[in-house]
Length: 206
Ligand SMILES: Nc1ncnc2c1ncn2[C@@H]1O[C@H](COP(=O)(O)OP(=O)(O)OP(=O)(O)O)[C@@H](O)[C@H]1O
Ligand SMILES: O=C(O)c1ccc[n+]([C@@H]2O[C@H](COP(=O)([O-])O)[C@@H](O)[C@H]2O)c1
Image (tube, helix red, strand yellow):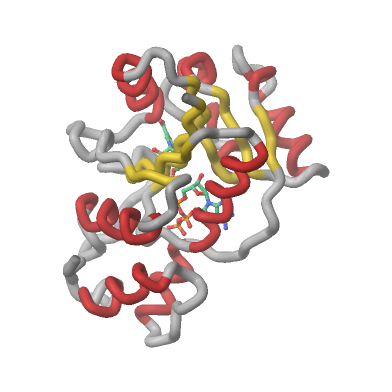
């Protein structure tokens, strides 16, 4: 199986995540794309009072519900400590040695690869697929990754620019502004029902 993995904090999952997963699936000929919510994101602080890893996992499940191209994995929730990608890919390799793994990232995230834990192991264990259009940014990413062993295996795919981020969604909820059409309806409903991102601890009630 050709398996794509879209790792993220998913605090919360939004439409750009799904467009990114969809384009990777279609352009790279993947059999499925697995959303991999980080238990403890390695480079990102989850603000105090925000949903737990378990709740972010539930939001991911709601986000992909009914779409057979996508799945959600608990692999990084079941491991203590920071969710380093190299460790996750090793685990997936051990579980299903015959799978061909593709780790999917947005363009900005790809640029930070040299500062990840064991970046060359990441490139050895999976194909890195980067959502970035042709042009100066793509070239800059190629230049920055070039010193890493395995950088020649990095692949790019095109994604329409979708200017949505989890921070934008959180800010809008906190400000009482609507988030419909920025996140899947089921995610918007769970955020509303659980009172998430309103500045007080909430719950995903699914
Ligand atoms: N608008 C977007 N376009 C393309 N890729 C994206 C976009 N938003 C997120 N991604 C990619 O999805 C993956 C997971 O992102 P993450 O869960 O951290 O969401 P985020 O929106 O970047 O979060 P935050 O706003 O909290 O920093 C990363 O590889 C990131 O580059
Ligand atoms: O392994 C690392 O050192 C590492 C450093 C930064 C990010 N990552 C992974 O990249 C993915 C996107 O990260 P983020 O911070 O946007 O949620 C997610 O799966 C992270 O675990 C991994």
